[in-house]
Structure formats: C-alpha cells, structure tokens
Length: 353
Image (cartoon, rainbow, N blue to C red; front, side, top):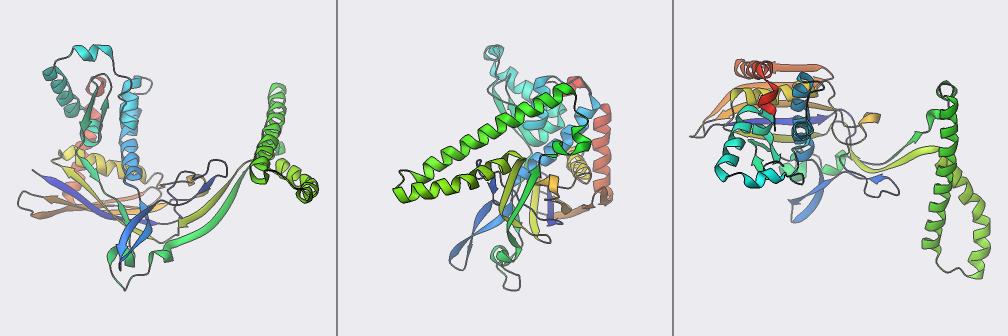
C-alpha cells in the first residue's frame, strides 16, 4: 500500500487564536490547548487543530467544483462537498436497498467524487458513513515542552495575553446613514429602541444575580450606582459587540504538522496541492480573520513511502504570503496537472449524491 506524507510547518505572520467564544454573554475567548508531558508535569500548550486544517482543505477543493457548476448544485451535493453531508436526512427508499447495492454505490461515489475519496463523509440517502484517505495530524507548537529540547524557548514565550477590540455601529456615520431609505431609517430607529431595552434588561438580570438580597447600606449605594449602570447600557447599545481575547499565539510562532494520504491517486495528491494554492489567496486560519488574526506561512515537503518503508522525495509546496505560492519537483507538478485534468473532465453526474 502506497502512502504519501506531507511533512511541514505553519508559521504565524500575525497573532493567532483558534477558539470559539468561551462565554457567549461576555464574548471572551482563549486559544485551545493540548496537554503535553514535560519534566513530570502536564503543560497546556496552544496547538493547531486538525479540524481547522482539514475543513480549510475540504472547502478549498469544494470551491473548485462549486465554481464549475454555478447554480446547478442540489442541496445534497452542496452539503456533502462543503461539510461532509448529514445522516439525519436519510431517505425512506434507502431501507429497500440491499447491502451489495449500497456498497456498489459507495464505491462509485468514491471513484468519481474526489472530495468523497479524500475526506469521506455521511451519505444521508444511503444512511452510511464512508471513510476518506486523508489523516490530518495535530499542529504542535515548536517549543521546549513539545520538542524536549532545552535550547528552544518555553511555550509561554509564544503566548500573548489580554487583547480587546470593539466592533462599532458604523451606521451612525453620515456617509452610511445618508444611504438609508425612509423605511431603512425607521427600521434603524426601531432596532435601536429594542436593543437598548434588551441591554437594560440584561443589566437588570445581571444585577439581581450578583447582588441577591440587599442590606440597607447596599441599597443606598445601589442608588448611586444606577447612573453608572445606565451609562453602561447606553455604551453597550451604541456598539455591536466587544471581544475580549484572554490569550493568543503571537507572531513568529511555528507549528509542526503532518498529513497522510493512504494509497492515493496522483490527482488526489494534486487536489491537496491545489487546496494550498487556493489557501494562498486568503492564508488565514482561526478566529478574528476580519482584524488580521491568523495569517500563516505554510511549507510542506512531500514524500512517498513504499511497502518497505522506503522514503522518496516528490517535491515541496510553499505558501509564502497572499497569492505567493511556490511548487517544486516534477512529481508534485505532475500531480497538480492530473488534478486539473480531473476537474476539466468532471461532469455533474460524477459528483451526484
């Protein structure tokens, strides 16, 4: 069985944060961590999520197919290409299919649909999961604790703390406000009234939870604080949201990473290469891309591993900056050409789910 390994690294060109909000009410976020054993202790160290990388690759390959069939894709096809499908939408007619028919249909889908072959997914009309050929590893931060080397800095060197930014309500700026119709202005006013009422209600509920039963002294002080709270309500109502970033990975950090393709066709190797070519158009991962977080450089050396564990270098790919993508080696260039041939000859029936 042939295997192809992409051995590489991601380097942060900007701060990086990979977490969803930890507290929906306060919009606080922190970078995801993974436990690493070092000198008898477990250190929680930032990492690059396999799901983040894998979903980015899938999306970039799916974009090529979606762009080839504008306004033609059915819901099943679009859902499968972009998110891997869904078993909750299984159809009654799938119950009447024999096992051999289901297996034959899966084989046909994997043969024709390159996204299905590489990434797998859920076929809701067959009520089956199919496995892909891609294994995506964890991106480990290069530091003393992960590499077990004292000549490297500690992971704490790469962790920044406590950033905050505000998304302002720019509709009050004249050049935006003047573009509203009379109906738009009316909608804006109604929205602001509802938003202020909602903000005031949230403040009152928070006050009840934190204060509980008041004493006489706290009652008098609460009257003095009511004006402050009212100002806070107004401040909240005038902006869309405030994000509080508790920690993040700083610029200049490196994550080691590995991809494995099991018994791939040449065009499937080329599809991964093409995904990184598309990634170079917008080389950002993680949260807060809208304010410049998550910009990355990426480099992979690509090797073929034979049955005897022999290792042959096929070439390399590199995302240096926005729209700066380099590919080296005749075999990897040929793989990309084979993928382009596949895409050129792709018909809608071949990706039909």
